Image (cartoon, rainbow, N blue to C red; front, side):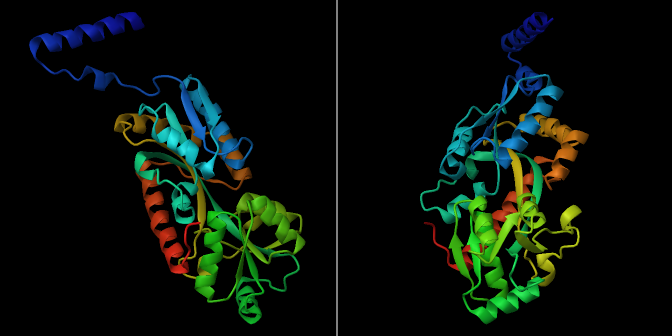
Length: 325
């Protein structure tokens, strides 16, 4: 059957060429995927991005009846994997799993290459808010208490800088409160959470799923969420940071992007297929357990999220006087 279809396709193309009529047969017949779909995760295996990518890949493969594999290409804070996809064939078969680092790398790293212009959004998968955590023994019970304490201690309250978004959280707090807080750098949220639990650092902005573990274990106190709406579950009673400080929202996200020149129809097909995955009850349940809010929608929605965050984070970094290192 496929051989007959191919012969018919070639015959139509030959007829068009012979008669001088341009028949757009190829454009009409183009489908996605045309082969194995590869989701490139630019971070090591086993991390939160890798787990979600593999969860999505299993459902996508089942729905498409195609092979979908996850490949980890870690290095340079995600840049190696991003550049690999930017240079891949723009057929939609190679997708990049992205997080806000795709925006923030160039804000914090002197040698970072801006790959965003070489990629195009396919779909936003989910969002996850950050939680303001403080030392379990810090004598504060809300954000107002923390602000007063930070101002009275004049530099004694420290904030963990354990990545781009946690650093931006510290800087936003400093900008809104005008408090003199001390930044302490850590290589990742694991060491930062350990330092918070031991009392080495005073406060930390951490993603909700790992913050929940520290809060439930009593190693830290949760004061507020940087989400743009009230949360559910463990953090249902947490106030919003933006209720105290207008514009203080800091939400992480995960999504998929493709090489820049990937055709619109292929992006639309991939977007539709992955939206169907996000509607799956098992995916919804897994996201809920990990405190991930599904997003989905058209590629333009993800484009708007990236644009908004790019502008917001650049302003925060500029106002804080942060120089790429």
